[in-house]
Length: 421
Image 1 (cartoon, helix red, strand yellow):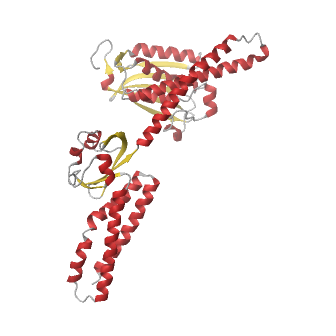
Image 2 (image 1 turned 90 degrees about the horizontal axis):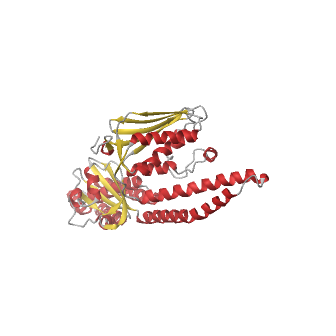
C-alpha cells in the first residue's frame, strides 16, 4: 500500500547524494567527476519533476489511507518537491556549460552557463539539433566527426572573445552530455607567459653577446692561472646564448599560425644533416643514412632543418662512443617518415610522455654534460604541428631510442616537380 511513499523517499535520498557528488566534483575541478554527477542530477530534475504533480492523484487512488498517513505522505511530497527545485537551481547555477543530448544530438536540457557560453536560448532551443544550432562554429565539425576527443581552446559560440574546452561524455541509452568550460583566464595567463619569455629572451640576447665577445678577446696564455676558468665561462656563456635563441624560436613558433609553403628538397637536406652529425660526433659514432622515400616536403625549409637536425644532434649527444646512429627517410602507408635511431642510453617509459615539455630532463647531470638546452624537443613538436605531422618516440633503457616524424601524403612532392607525390 505504501510503495509510493518508499519510492519517493528513495528518490529524495538519491537526489541529495547526487547533488552532494556534483558539488564535490565541481570543487575538484574534474570534467568527468562533474559530468557524472550532473548527468544524474539533471536526469532526476527532468524525469522526476512531475512526481510532485502526481502525488495527489496517487493519494486519492489509494484506499484506506488515514488522515495521519495522508499528512505524512504530503509532507514528504513537499520536501521532495523542494529538493527538486533545489536540484534544478543547483544544476542551472553550475559554472560549466552543461547540455543534455538524446541519441540524435537533440537538446533535452541545458543550464544558464550554456546560454552564456554556447549561445543557446530557451525555450527556442529545447529539442533543437545541436549540430545545426552550432553549424557556424568550430564545434559543428567536431560534433559531426563524433567528438571522440575533447576539443581544446576554441572560441565560445556565445562569446567569440572567450575560449572554452569542450567534452562530450556518453551515458545512459545512446545519450550524451556536453560540457564546456571557460578557460579565458588560462588563455590570458598563457599569453602573459609567452610575452614575458619572448621579452626577457630578447633583452638577454644583447648583454650575453657582449659578455661572450669580451671573453673571446681574453687570451688564456696571458693569464695561464685563469685558463680553466676562462674555458668554463666561455662554454657557459655560449650555452646561455643558445638557450636564449631557442626560447626566441619557441616564442615565434607558438604564435605562428601559418608556415611558408615552399618545396624542401629532402635529398640535399638529408646530406646536410648527416654532415652536421659527423662534425658533432668527431668520429666517435658510426652514422648511416638510408633515404628511400624519393619525395620532397612542402613546408618551411628553415624550420624543418632545425627540427630534423635537432633529433640527430640529440642522438649524437646521448649515444656513448662506439655507438651507431641511423637516419632514415622512407615511405609509409600514411605518407613518409623521417626517423633517427641510436644505440644510446635509452629512456624509461615513464618519461616518454613528457619529453617534449620545455626544460624537461630525464637526467639533469647528463643534459648538462651534453650541452643541451632542454628546449630542442619542444621546438621539434611545434615545427611538426605546423606541418600537420606527428612525433613518435620508442625507447628502451640500455637499448637505444627511435624518434620518428610522420608526414601526411598532402605534404609530399615528387622530386623536381610541383605535383603531389
